[in-house]
Image 1 (cartoon, rainbow, N blue to C red):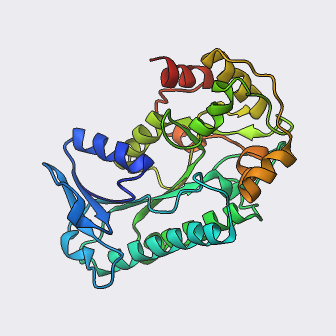
Image 2: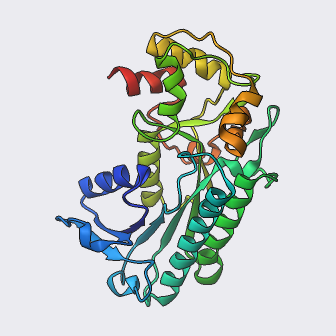
Length: 303
C-alpha cells in the first residue's frame, strides 16, 4: 500500500514507519524540512506546513493517511504558551490534512487520526468504552474533542473511513510517560501518587503499532477506537507493579498538591484518570500482545 504519515519522526511515528517498511508498504512522511531527511527504499519525504508547500502533488493515489502530528503533552509544564502550542499544533496539522485530502483527485480510503482517552474526562467510578458520550470539561478533553471533530470532516465530506485512535498511557522504556514515572523508583523514592485510587489506562507500545496495522488491514473497524489494554489498573497498583519489576521500594507517597505544584494543570494526567476499555479492538478480535501490566513492564525492563 501507499501510506502517508504525519508525525513520522515522533515517538509512535518512528516505530510505525519501521513496521510499515518491514511489511513492504510505500511510506510517505510529511515533514517541515525535507532537506535533512535521508530517503531509502520504500521511504519518501514530502514537504508540508511551510508557505507554498503542495504535498498533494506527491500523494495522489495514497491508500491510507495517518495523522500523528502535534506538540507532545508529556514534555513540560503546561504553561499558557505551551497549552496554546499543544492545541494549535493539532488543529493546524489536522486542518492541513483535510485540505490535502480535498485537493487529491483520488481520495485515500482510510484516515487514521491520533486522539486520546482524555476525551472522556476523568472519573474513579465510571468505566468508559467507545460508546461513552463526551463528558470532559478540562483542557485536554477540549483539545481531543476539537481534534476529532476536524478529522471527522473526511468521513462527512468524502465518506472516507475515519478512525480516531484514543491513546491511553503508552508504555515504552525510552519515550512517553513511563521513563518519568519510573525515575523516582530508580532513585529509591517511588510511592503512591495522590490517593492511588485514580485509574491508569495503559497500553504497550508494541500493541499500539500492531493495532494500527491491524486496523489498516481490517476495513470493518471505524470511528473512535480505544488504544488501551484490556486490564486498566489503579495508580497504586501501577506503582506496586512497577516497583516489583524494577526491584525497588514503593514507599514514599506524593500528595496531589505536590504534583500539582510541580506540573501545574498537567498534573491531571497522573492525579486524575479514567478507566477505559478497548471494546472495539476486542470485538474485532485484535490479538493483544500484552493484556496485563506486569507482563508488559517485564517485557520493557527485563528483556
